[in-house]
Image (cartoon, rainbow over all chains, first blue to last red; front, side, top):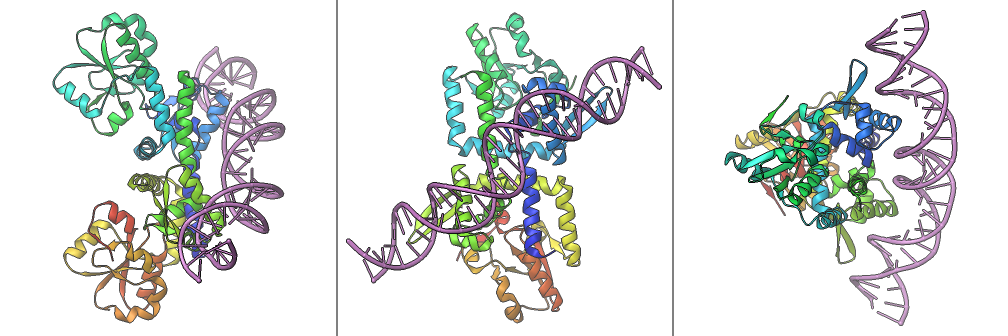
Length: 220
Length: 220
DNA sequence: TTCTCATTCAATAGTTTTATTGAATGAAGT
DNA sequence: ACTTCATTCAATAAAACTATTGAATGAGAA
C-alpha cells in the first residue's frame, strides 16, 4: 500500500468512527448509556425510538467499538465501551457549547422560558457539600440511581417528585442533578420545587461527568 | 417549544457540528490547519484536493464554527477557530487509536512494512532534550516551520532531506517530527536517515500536540 | 422439543452528502 | 475602469444514511 492510500485509509477509519457520532439519536443514546448498562427496550423507551430503530443505532455504535453488549438472562445490556468514549463526547460537547451559536441561543431561549433557573457548577456543589449546606437529589429514574449516584444523594425520580416533595426540607438549599447538561429532568425538578416554595438549583452537568472527575460516588 | 423538541434540537445541533468532522478530507484539513493559518490553495495541494472541493469542505467547517478565515492581501487564510477544536479532535483521535481495531491493524501493517521504526513519546523527547542527547529536526514544509516549531528544532523539510542529510551529525540521536501521528513525513525521514547510517526515530505525535501541552516553542 | 419474546436483520423509499465541472464573484494590482 | 486570479457558488449524478415495516433469529423457559 502506498503512503497516500494509507493516509487516506487512516483518516477514513477515523471518520468512520466519528460518523457513528454524527446522529442526534445516537448521541442521546450515548448520554443514556453513560448512566450505566441498560437493555435495548429501556433505551428505546427513554429516547422515543422504536425498538428496531434503537437496535439499529446500537449496532452502528457497536461496529465502531463505541459500545459493547452483554447478555444478562433474557436481556441484552448495552454499555459504553470505556471511559474514553465518554471523554471524547465530552470534548465535543464542550466544543459545541463554546463555539456553536445555534446551541448557545437554543439553550438561552430555553432557560429564558423557565425564568433563568439557577445552576451550580461541580466546584460550587463540592463546596456546598463540604459546608453541609445542601440536600442533593437525583431525579433520574430509580434504575439509573441504583447503577451509581453522587455520594449521599437522595433518589427523587422526576415522575415521583410532585407527590413526594413534602419529604424534602423547605429550609435548606436543594441541588438536583440528572443525566447531563443536555438532559432536562433536573430543570423540570428545579422549576417544580421553586414554584412550591423550595429553594432549588440544578447541577450544571450530570452524574457521568461527576463520576468521570473521580468525585465521590456510591452504588446501591 | 416543548421539552422533547428542545432536547431533540440540541442533540441535532451537536450532531450537526460533528457531521462537519465525519469526513476524512476534512479531518486531514484540520490536521493541516493545526500547523497554523494557510491559504486555500496550500490546503488543496497538501491534501490532494481540487481547489473547489477544498473550498467546499472549508465552508462546511466554517459553518460549524470550527475554522475561521481572514484575508491577507490576495489570499484567504484559514485557521482553526480555537484550541478547543484541536482538543476535541485529539480526544477523538485518541479514542480511535485505543478502540478501533481497523485503525490499529492499519498502523501496524504500515509500520511492519517499514521495519517497525522507533518512535519516542513527548516525555522521552523532553528527557532527551534536557540531557542534550538529541538533534530535533522538523520535516514539515518550511512555511509551517516558520509558523511555529519546537524550540531549537532544525528545519529539514522532507523533500530537501535527501541532499541535505550530510549537514546532520551521524554520531548523535536524531528525532524527527511532523504534523501529527497520522502524518507520514516523519516516518519517511526516519526511514531515509536510518538507511544512510544515522540513528533516527520519530516523535509519536506532532507539533500541534507539543504546542497544545505548553511545551517550549519558537517562531521565526 | 416447543414456545415465548427480546432483539436483530432485510428491504425500501425518502433524504442527505460527496466530488466534479464550469461559471460567477470580488478584492488587488495596473 | 479594467484585468487578473484566488476563491466561492451552482448544478448534477453517484453514493450513503435514516426511519419504517415486517420477518427472522436465537436464548431462556416450560
